[in-house]
Image (tube, one colour):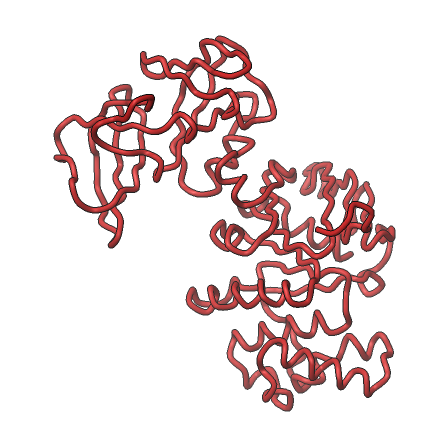
Length: 367
């Protein structure tokens, strides 16, 4: 991440964007350090594209400040901001060759012609399409067009690249291929990428940091690993990956342990597993999150937390089985397990998990 005194690539300070009485961006302060791959992740309508467009200058903010490379650009038009945007529909000029498309931003900056030619060559090599410079965009495949759009955005050397669901129009195989390519281009250029998607797998596999958004706010900004293992809210837990959410009550809490009552059983869980920012108190209703792959069947080892129930349905997924279960208290539990040793569909089963696989979510943070 570099040294502390480096200027962040992008900063938003208390940014609000209202459409009538609706706040599409609701007081967002975000610092994006230079050279990282940050993804804005969330459901449709959560404000992630509006935030990206506000940084680019296409959607002027109602209030707040936007800094790019340490410079206040809040009131500057898009073409004066040192950022470039890549869209889902490529937005290439159809009657210009690929070379002219890639060099366009450099021409706008009045770079000398020999320098533009050198830059375009470097970009064509970077996107691994050195031979298509003379073609027009219509002669290229969707994946090639998206690579050219990326090269065009990178050519003028912006502080940051803003990518609005750029892979959304591609089929799955190509999309995964381009995810790897985007990540490697980001690494090799050292550019700051701010990427918008509603696809959690895409966000988790590509990003250094993920900002999960809901209703115009950032619910959690963290590494993909931390968001998965230590969600800050029940919304984040449910949006990122599959999650079992079990209602419970906090009986006691001290510095080291939380005593929790679940379906008449007392469980002891490390207090460090409280992942929400709001600290619950004894007597509070809480929600426990356990990932499906952390639930095991059969004989419980010493110290494990256990529940009983029955299997409701099973889905065979090749190397693993997805089981839907129901506890004695009526809570639905998903389990991911390997084939073999499957319980009878009708019989009662015991399932268990380690205390440190549980995340405790307090109820002030509603899903």
